[in-house]
Length: 402
Image (cartoon, rainbow, N blue to C red; front, top):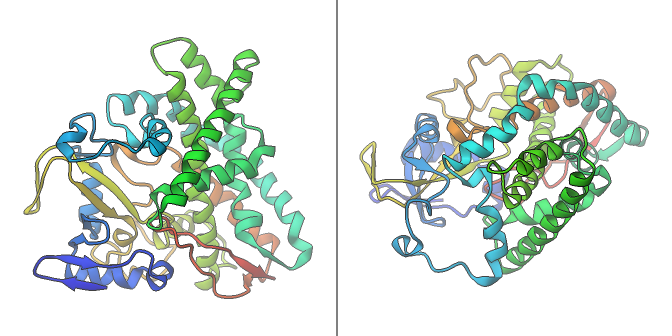
């Protein structure tokens, strides 16, 4: 990492293996030296302090969408290449990428399904699934927990909630991986090709499923969304397809790594044998979050703390750095389940606060105690490595023995 204090410019390769596997020393140096800096590899200003990240997540002068207030010409953007158009046409309807009033309307349609009191009814199913998965590998005395435990739980639960056949899990997972790779630092033409192909295939699959549900509705979220769409004026079919796919992708992608990172942290910090409670789960989310960078556009000319940002500029919010800020968290590199309060930003904040946060919390709350109760003596079979997938922060594998 090279820091130019005068220009507040930082050269830091987000694909550097040392950074990918342990970004926290770099975050500490950035917060101490240039807490607001221009990240050369990305080309935009980034914020590393908790105070700034938390404030900007809530600041309505910044948003996830920009083309509703500026044209591509004003932004200096070229037209979307034809080969990428299917992906970006799909993304324009995403709850994650829209601003009010569209965002307000779309979020209102799905929010009720993810309220804490609503997802609580899934507790027995999550417990049942956790036990079934462990039954499948307990006698082997070793497993890659990322593949055999952390991945199936979120994808099965979100698929069942939506009404998508769980037998399609492997296809859904591959499509999801290919699509979200568009946001990774290692993006290249092959990743773009796979993302477009996955978008088309996933959309076709969901359109077929929607046709089935229209003919024969079920007791699931997809049927509820279809009913809303059929009533008119609340949801178009394109919005319906994008929303369903977003929920499937977001409903497992981050949670897989929250579980994987969490198991690793509990073992490494000697908490694996503890009686796990709410404090452990919130601390896991703070200590090693699955998402480390989230971006916003300036929706108007903004002067933030003396930094003048032009309308249309992108800013990067370093969630992983904010969660280890000693100004907000005493001894931030220590895993402390008694930490109160624990205002981590792993789920974001403001109007884009993660709609699936209650479900992710429940999955951690239910699955992890069962895992450690069923597999006493669980330990790492070797040092786990993180995937080259920044701005995501998750493991390649989690090989364990017991």
